[in-house]
Length: 398
Image 1: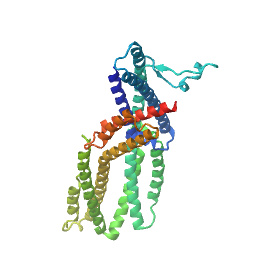
Image 2: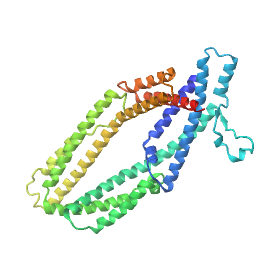
Image 3: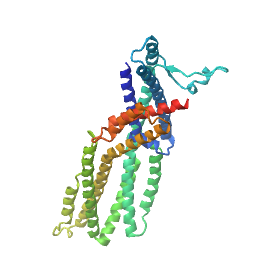
């Protein structure tokens, strides 16, 4: 039974860490919010705090049972009774502060509610599911809106750059820019205000993007008539050079991850530069009579504009892919740093010679400094070491 509970504890700890590492959770933690999204943030923080409190109390009781069992190779009746109380009885005591006011008395100090280990897990389960659902739902809406907002802002920047090059003013661009600022503020501070039936409503962003695209096309036409295509072709070539470098970097980082991380889940490698280079060659290849035909230059201008957009998007994807792959290495370094920080904490608390802590530390260290590194096992080992250091820290405070 003790082994089962230990395994359960490790799985719960890993699940909580994975929850806090989720993109949606990280977005919530790092944002200044308002409205419906602020209420979700408050609920998630409250529920997450309750989850960690229950997990910590559950872990303390289980640690006490482990220590009792370790001290008695052949436990007698008294030890067996105590183990039974810890493992099966109401041994998880919630803080007295959690006791509602109506259950307190004037003279008697309030005592916290007591739960069994199973009841504590049963109480954690709906809390975790509630937080996970809220985070996933918000992430689905927010990620869609942020992605679309990035596209619209890229469209705005492109139009502004063309306008700056051409000089003058464009009232339509000014109006769209003001509208975009209003919508962007809502996307960043209260994305749920732009949700319909649980999905992101991108209608306003799509309308702004359509208007900006129309403005940009008009500015591109003016730029084409004024200066021609040579500079734009050079610009596409430069982006393709950057894209080739980005694709090579993605391959190099992928190869490094395959050596250093066990069974990594890797995205597909970017491989667009060759096809885009062929498209560029086709655009620049002379076509007799094309410019003289009605709409010939306009068609070529559109092909160049499409190619510019495709090259920029491919470069962004390549860099994002490199970042995603490199994130596995960053995760390993983050875990290494946390392990060393807790080792310093243990030493500061006077537990540098603690044999059990030393074994737990070495187990985590071996996993983190072995190539390839199993990040899941390393996370579990680090959690165990953190819990052990924390339990000693709290014991020293009593």
